[in-house]
Length: 337
Image 1 (cartoon, rainbow, N blue to C red):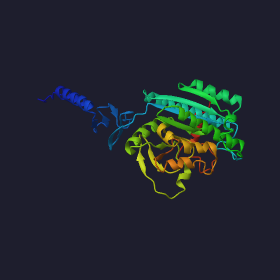
Image 2: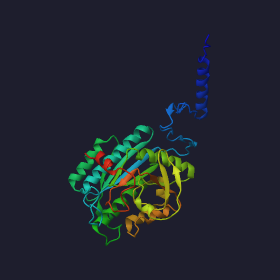
Image 3: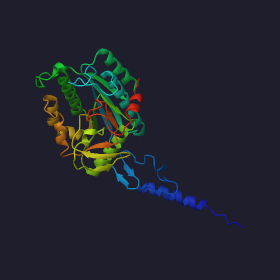
Image 4: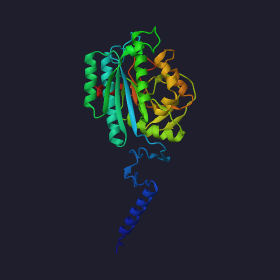
């Protein structure tokens, strides 16, 4: 006669054990079916819990020290200038406003996806604009109004910066400096945990903001200090033979870098501690313009994603533009009106 096994008692004790492990903060991995029984998720899903723990298979768990509660995204727009002080055309050969519109749509999609995952994080989106024509401003406001994100639009009064910015610069360069200066002043006045400064020619993947928040919490815990995250894997960073380090984020690798452009995410603390130096970028243009940022990276880590989470839509030949190993055409088409 076939012996019938009584699995009811086994299942009962298994459930009690799982509950006990949850109470203690441990995670149980069932490698036979590739699942976490305590989280009730497949191992290829997102196992980390924002603000609590970062989980990477097979390296285990990192308890998060500083939870991100709010993120303020500040997008600097200007649709009247194709490329500052240059006659070059951008990839896809469109007018500047088309890059601004698509970049904004892609960023909103990424924030919306993150807001579904991070229920406790407050998101705020501000667009600061210089010199865009009224019809483009109306279109930007229309895109903002269609989003589910708390947002605001601000036209920059360039006259108010004439006594702050040194004279002798082109209209485009002065406008760019004034817009960054305005963004910096907003960050100084607000008390959000993180600020994301964004230029209006970056197409974001839908996972960009989610990965950046998970990565910031994880690396802030690992380094025990604040840091800077870039959204792009810039090609020019591969033109130099210099030592680097590779870290595991949530779903991406991140590379330690020493330079960046002026699209970056960082903490309120770093902005406050380095405000006087960052302010120089709004007062005087000294090549490289980003040098005050680079000085921060001598003290606080700056990390760039591999592959890229956002692509800078520059000229096809620019080493500051198209990130390697990203389907930019697909990303471009996904964000058309």
